[in-house]
Each structure stands twice: as structure tokens, then as C-alpha cells.
Amino acid sequence: MPGLPALFDLSGRVAVVTGGGGALGRVVAGALAGAGASVVVVDLSEDTAAKVAASLTGAGAGAGAPKAIGLGADLSIEDGAGAAQAGSLERVPAEGPELGE
Ligand SMILES: NC(=O)c1ccc[n+]([C@@H]2O[C@H](COP(=O)([O-])OP(=O)(O)OC[C@H]3O[C@@H](n4cnc5c(N)ncnc54)[C@H](O)[C@@H]3O)[C@@H](O)[C@H]2O)c1
Image 1: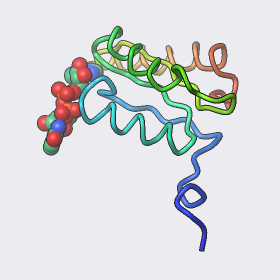
Image 2: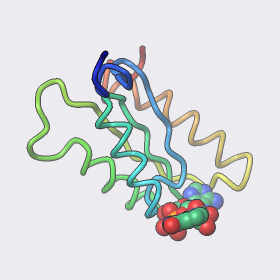
Image 3: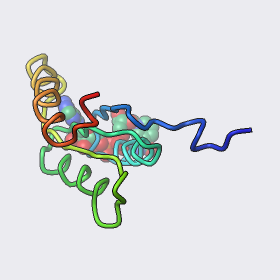
Image 4: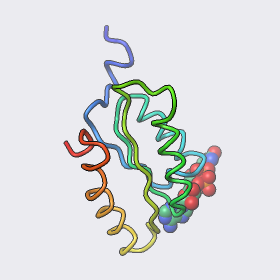
């Protein structure tokens, strides 16, 4: 029987975590990154989103570690959701090529 990493291997996948700067969002983002996903952390606070993303790619991350980026956007309004989508599409390929797959 395959182990958990094989069952939940998200390598090559991109996860978008909304409210990613919050208590639950940080845990979810960390779990997804731990399973190999590249993570887009979106939060009202761009600073917080960037810090969470940095924590996922920080010291100790190996060469094959997942990439993460942080985006600030207000997802309660259509323009904010659109900006988050556009920001993901703009920044992901440049900052983590595997995110663009
Ligand atoms: N923490 C718990 O144990 C728990 C348990 C049950 C339910 N919940 C619910 O789950 C949700 C998240 O909980 P939490 O503890 O992570 O909350 P939190 O307040 O720690 O985090 C919420 C995050 O969402 C962000 N956010 C708020 N409005 C936003 C917007 N319009 N656009 C983008 N980002 C926005 C905030 O900046 C914050 O970083 C809440 O609705 C909470 O009521 C939490």
C-alpha cells in the first residue's frame, strides 16, 4: 500500500489559498506545500500573504521545494478576485516556472 506522500502527492500542481494569511489559511498553505504543491497565497494583507509565502520557501527548503508567492487582494469584490487571478497569471510563470504548468 502506498504511503501518504504517494497518495497525496501534489507535485506539479498549483494551489490557490484564499485568506492564506489567516490562522487556517497558513495551515492549509503549509499542508499543500508539504504535499509538493506550488502555492499562491492570497490575502487582504499583501504583507501577510508575502510573509506566509516566504515561510513556505524559506531557509531549509531543498532544491525541489515547492514555490510560493503572496498576493494582496480583496476577494469580497469582483475587481479584487480579478486582480488576484491576473496577478497569479502574471507572477507565477516568472517567479516559479513550474507554477505555470
Ligand atoms: N480558526 C478556527 O478554528 C475556525 C474554526 C471554524 C471556522 N473558522 C472560520 O474559518 C474562516 C477562517 O478562519 P481563520 O481563523 O483562518 O481566520 P483569520 O481571521 O485568522 O484569517 C482570515 C484571513 O482572511 C483574510 N481576509 C479577510 N477578508 C478578506 C477578503 N475580503 N479578501 C481576502 N482576504 C481576506 C484576512 O486578512 C485574514 O488573513 C473564518 O470564517 C472563521 O470564522 C475558523
